[in-house]
Length: 108
Image 1 (cartoon, rainbow, N blue to C red):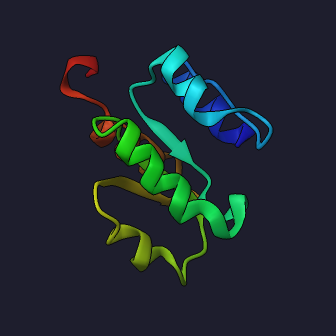
Image 2 (cartoon, helix red, strand yellow):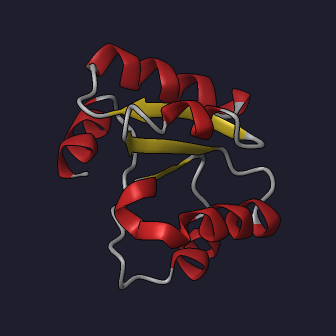
C-alpha cells in the first residue's frame, strides 16, 4: 500500500494509510474520505463482512478492491456497489482511471 500512497499523492490526493490495528469505521467517520481502497485479501477471510459492514454504515462511500488475486478478481467485480478493482501488479494508468471513476462528481 505504500507504493499506492506515493502514486496517489503524486496526483494530489490526500491519502491516509490504515493498518489492521486501526479502527476502520471510526477512522472513516473522522476523516470522511471520498473513496476507500481496501486490500481485500490481505485482511483474510473476514473481508466480506468488513465490506458489507462498510457498505451498511457508509452507503455512499465508494470502495475499490486493491491487490486482488487475479483468480478471484471476477468475484470481486460482481460485489454489490464495488467502485472498482485494482489487481497486483498494477499499472499506474489503471490506478488513475479506477480512482477517478470512483470519486464523487464534486471532487473531479
